[in-house]
Image 1 (cartoon, rainbow, N blue to C red):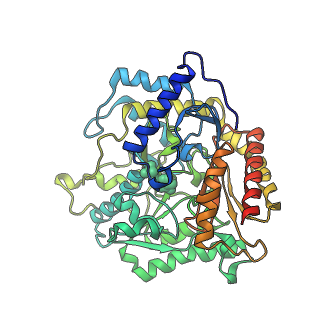
Image 2 (cartoon, rainbow, N blue to C red; image 1 turned 90 degrees about the horizontal axis):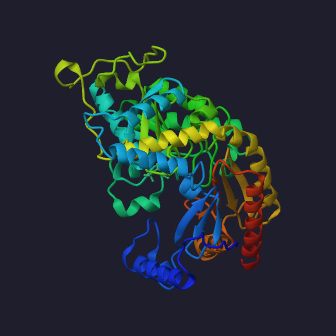
Image 3 (cartoon, rainbow, N blue to C red; image 1 turned 45 degrees about the vertical axis):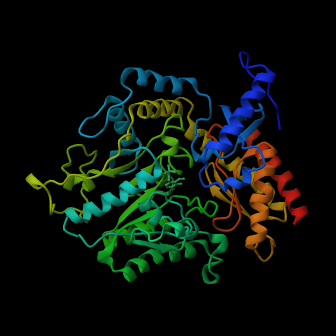
Length: 496
Ligand SMILES: Cc1ncc(COP(=O)(O)O)c(C=O)c1O
């Protein structure tokens, strides 16, 4: 709850109050917040965040908050980095915009080359977008068109996990596994199929005492879904390395190895949706590297620029691009997948297909320049090393909260944690809808913010609090999170 003085040059107190009043009035009149019940601000003030510095952000009154969620899993390097902002400004002055439709520009080329060098396995081709939803949308469209061009036109379905969030555009929404946010937009794009997630805390009885057996069962459920749907109809499996929605479900040991086997067995593409889990969130450039699996496609966004400008994309191997005229000349190893080589069918003149997909701002020059500067910070400050060195301390600090009666489970990896809240620790009984509504939206969200912590209190699955702080955080920040959470959760429990 620290209040900092306004930097020199800022308006006087009275002038600042007038600005604040205007911002509030204009926001109430004209701004529509995403995924927000707007009536909740009908009476009160909308929080307006005006600046950031390091691990902290400041509201219009100068009050400081620890950014325990990196904005929205975005601000890996923290806020207020002048060198990254300046890289964007320089690029805007040099070439603010040119499309990646038929043309290239230097920053997109350099960024694609750099990402190819960082990516796992044989992923060395980058298709840029502006967001995570567009990345997921692109990956599904690529999978569909790819299979059509190699003579397997019946493959169009996608498998994803219960409660998983993969974005909100209509294709991505069909992959998303949250019925509540899909229902108003039915009918969905056809082809979305759900399988169980890896929430070990809520594992079915018969595998509840054996993490590896649980992981094997959850992976095998993907094989069973493919069999049920008809193997010739399934194009791809979309999985996050650590599933965000539901409160950070890490993969059990052996889970991804088994999923890879299943995808290979059925010739289905494995898409690693790393919109959150890439760029250091788990201590590696890509989440798949942490768990040792090689996807066919990676989708990314958010941390690639740490939010200094929007950017997303997907990475694929030359094999997937072969029907679209890639050949193997750029491959780092000359790798060829026996599963997916084939001859383009329905292709244009010269036997080559064109990926019929694109968006105007994909790979925007300013965003690409910013991403390069962001990666420079990663390297200079060894942010991956910082996460790996401190993730144990982060976990241990959050696990102190286990002594609270309301804390059922603390789970996650890297700098990505979920804390599941329960009504009864012994039986793991969760809150009913009404209790959860009061707990999360009525009490915890405003109370945690008031106490100076930005985090997420969510009940898309069972009620959880999520933390994903900037990768620069160290013990002092972990302690601050723990202390705020302890005080607010204790107060919540006393009111239940
Ligand atoms: C795993 C995953 N995929 C896709 C998306 C969609 O990204 P965006 O909000 O940039 O469209 C998100 C957003 O949080 C995500 O977490």
